[in-house]
Image 1 (cartoon, helix red, strand yellow):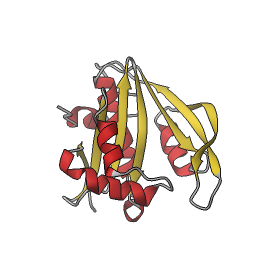
Image 2 (spheres, rainbow, N blue to C red):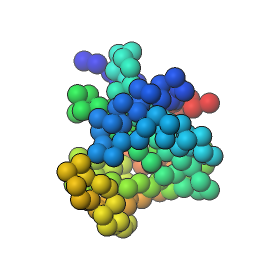
Image 3 (spheres, one colour):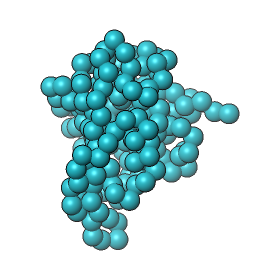
Image 4 (cartoon, rainbow, N blue to C red):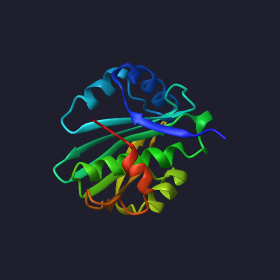
Length: 172
């Protein structure tokens, strides 16, 4: 069985993450967009790999004041259902909590039931809806559900997070 490992997103991996993003979303972000996002104050990126492979998934987030917003999370279609999405979410929540964020929030497509289940297992609850938020490849748009969860203090991991993961990701 292969093991998923997470690490901070290195600058040399941005092009690869852009390729994974393009495989995950109908409105993909370019490498230049990723560089701009990661260049903003409080932004961070995490990659997931299986057995030393190139990035199989990513999480991009930004901490502002006491909130961390998950900007994008994706796992390459051929690497899904192996736990990478959950590990990425856990790592992003752990980093946010360790950085002093008290809240974790995100948007998710209303049709993305798999992601919604993962988010709900980590304590995220739907708090709103953004109509016609995400463009669809065939035309039209789908609503985004906004979700939010409290984060534990830096002394402890977020609810539902494996404490070993919270101590195992060094984002410095």
